[in-house]
Length: 260
Image 1 (cartoon, rainbow, N blue to C red):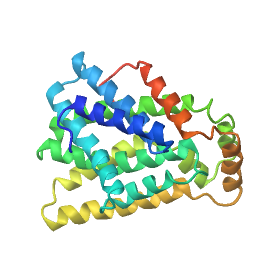
Image 2 (image 1 turned 135 degrees about the vertical axis):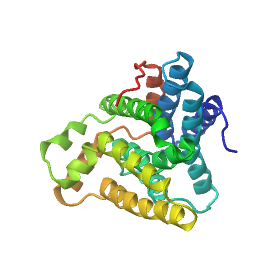
Image 3 (image 1 turned 45 degrees about the horizontal axis):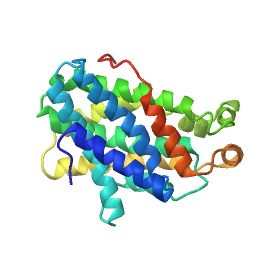
């Protein structure tokens, strides 16, 4: 059932996290990250830190439901976006790094879902939602890099990714939040100009592009593949332990801003 309030979103995320811990399911990695984002937005609304708290909640709920609906579709074998399908399929791969799992979820949610949510909430007036759009991106950006620092202790050799820089390294450790948010904004602007089949076609084409990026995040070649294997060799192996660690760090506080 689609959430209608931010507290309902948080409750659903808590259920996903709890169930993933019980079943040792890597699906809980992204849910734990997303819990951080949603809790930060909820706290910011309560403190009056957004231009329009009611609209921000609507924006957050619309955005979150894109992920929750995709997950429900995956679990019931119903059609879903290819970018989310790749992210969910990766949770079944024990060889994928925690970082790769998180970035795949972010890829689908920011590069595809965020633009759709912004277009829907804007009612065709993108300027009205820009402050809220920038705010939610700022939160995602801050928390993402915080989480990457958190997983250093789960993946002690993660710094090896910085030893050589090629296209795959750039995709994997320099996944650009700034580029993603700019792309999502342009995508939203394109969407509000579309109607009917053009709207659906625009989303489908965007999904195809983002799915290709997902392939670059998960399919390593050559020496980069060996590096990822080596990092994984020393990474924590128990999904439940990793989820608990990611979720417990949700208690960390960040400053919620509305700047870009």
